[in-house]
Length: 289
Ligand code: FVH
Image 1 (cartoon, rainbow, N blue to C red):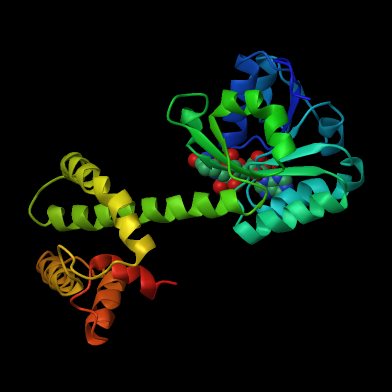
Image 2 (image 1 turned 30 degrees about the vertical axis):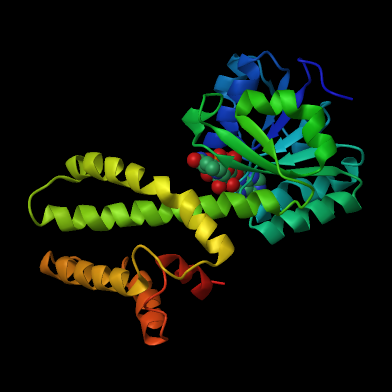
């Protein structure tokens, strides 16, 4: 049965993200029970109407879905193993970042305790919660997702990807891998620009516009990967290898280490050495799988 607009919710974990999630639920008027391992983090939330629980057992004594937003996989077990026998028939929504197989392990663990498990990957930082632009990717129990979609949409745009509990986590970390490569590249570029007196903030403004223009091609690059259509590229691996070689020389001239750019150069060098230089850059995908 779908929830009412006043479905109670329990939040386990009041780090920066747990507090943001609880605040969004309270703002929407949902009865919200909160627990944190270390006491004292619930003061503002209690002032806003949250019910503070002293123990996990007390927290999950409240009705409604249990949302875990803890540090990592181990901390979810640390919090919930002692109360596992009280989870039968309950719905656990785990928004803690866990690796895909950790999420699958938690789903199997929950199933052994007759608990319905939905995993979520939060694509937002705490100030974005409840705001446009925030999204949470879900997989695992469709029953839990369907029953609580209205509540989940209060936190961030909610999208469900099927019953493999590890799917959302895979998506989450794939997106983060993309993001970190971009952030690392920015820092490498900022280090180069310092050598000619340009501040990182000024470089950031120009880099943002450049990256934004360049990322428009990602769906097209993905289509090339999916079809493995690497022949007749606009720009070949050999072309990109020459660009990476030039980036290396430019970085050395700017006294910047090659630590960040070296792995990609290694991938391109290897493909040229193996006779793939005339193929498109997207063929690099084949070196990764
Ligand atoms: N903050 C963010 O920007 C990111 C956005 C994307 C998703 N992540 C993930 O969300 C999880 C929680 O993140 P957080 O920002 O709330 O993290 P912290 O502020 O460091 O709070 C961690 C909470 O976990 C509790 N905790 C740690 N170990 C244990 C344990 N063994 N047993 C029970 N609770 C534990 C900790 O409690 P305490 O230290 O205050 O007692 C905090 O409540 C995380 O997976 C991110 O990757 C956030």
